[in-house]
Amino acid sequence: MRVLGVDPGLTRCGIGVVDGVAGRPLTMVGVGVIRTPAEAETPDRLVAVEAGIEAWLDEHRPERVAVERVFSQHNVRTVMGTAQASAVAMLCAARRGLPVALHTPSEVKAAVTGSGRAEKDQVGAMVTRLLRLDAPPKPADAADALALAICHIWRAPAQNRLQQAVAAHRAAPAPRRTAPGRRPQKGRPA
Image (cartoon, rainbow, N blue to C red):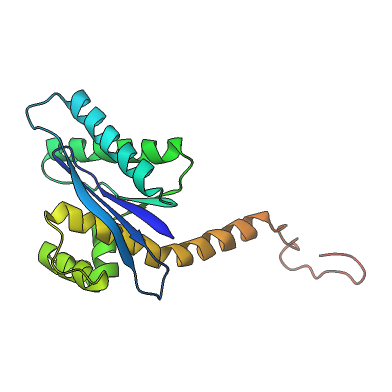
């Protein structure tokens, strides 16, 4: 499975592509950062993020896209920019019919390091180790994008089985129930 991981941001949008399946060694296909100038207007920055993501999708042809789920922060301006860049990534994937998964930062950290409270340098070190790289990807946004892709590769099989079980449960006919205190009669359905 080839996954494009996106660590959304307006100034730096981390992006990374990983090939692999759960339980097997993973391979980094590419990693980078889409940068936009802080002094540019937000609509222009979003267009630049879109163009960058589209270029990565064209070049690497992923099967799925994993995006960091935006969470509440104290700086509303930062949250807004992150949410906008996240929406652009989801839009680019949806246009191509690619499945999109959202993963929280703590979920990604737990999947990659074993601790949902891991520091950025720990995530970078584990990404380096898991992908057998010579050095941690820089800046941290790039390592985070790879961590998102890794998290999704490892969690997707379990998530798919869970979704299938829920769908099967919803599709199954509901059992008929008898009124409290009544026993079903022989030969008659309950």
